[in-house]
Amino acid sequence: MSADHPPGLDLDRLRGLLERERPGLVNGPLSGRLIEGGRSNLTYALSDGTSKWVVRRPPLGHVLATAHDMKREHRVISALHPTDVPVPRPVLLCEDEEVLGAPFYVMEFVEGTPYRTADQLAPLGEERTRNAVLSLVDTLVELHAVDPAEVGLGDFGRPEGFLDRQLRRWGKQLDASRNRELAGIDELHAALGRALPTSPAPAVVHGDYRLDNVLIGADDRIKAILDWEMSTIGDPLTDLGLLVMYSQPLALPHSPVSTTAQAAGHPSPQELIERYAARSGRDVSAVSWYTAFAWFKLAVILEGIHYRYTLGQTVGRGFDRIGELVPVFIDHGLTTLQEG
Image (cartoon, rainbow, N blue to C red; front, side, top):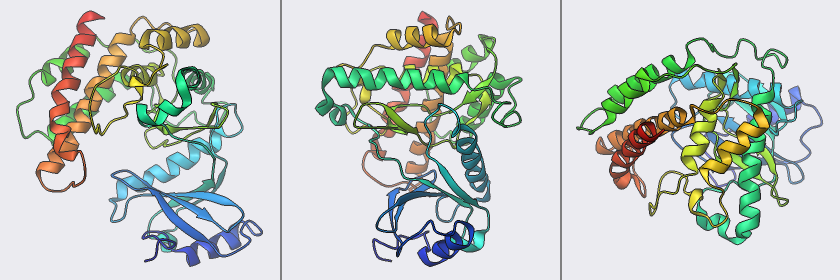
């Protein structure tokens, strides 16, 4: 297939569907290119020469479980679009696998930059970097202020016992990729279980909230939050804990995880926590638990990637070094929990 016809995107069938379901939307021949492909969902940019959209679908050769993601992602951005939370405008959801071989959805293309590394942030300078990261906190407060029932997401998750289930779920993930001794990981898992905090009132949780999952516009404001595949109704402080974890500098060359915290001007974790607390009115006294849980979750995710790498299932730059990162994340988790 040519660059304009990437695998997994049948432009003729897609055009036929859009003409039937959204007549007048498309005004010329469609071209498409893969923006991001990976272990999770595939994202394509679509254009008719004047307008642009985005298509999200499960990976090629996907297992059926991920088909569920498309409906969930489409549902949450459709529910949030009328609110103050910046998300792309949804265009349509297609569950008919005849069109692209898997369920998918189409949304408007939003102009903006996802900043993944400190080097990418450097040209912004200290002041603009600071503003961008602070707006990340403010946007999270806006997301967590949405009443799930009011936007039709009352049944989008099961908030009772949320943290306990999360801990069990990630413990199972860990067991599924165990093929080496990892000092401290069971200790971290057990310590988190013994110290479970009491969750605040449930909110819409993004599940993977960080700088490279939002698009920042030329005015340094957040134009859209992307990648809703982990979203649910649950404990909002899990999003804060992850954001705090990502705002701690890790000196890792070619890191497979976001390294924006090293950027000059990046606010300290403490400032982010205080800003969230002041603007949301939530009690954040247990934030160290949530941050330690984020370190644990990332350690498990990275160990899963390392495990697949050792089986020869994952190739690419940096994958050979992921195994070395896991103990670093475990140590940070244990230290965060001990120091509170």
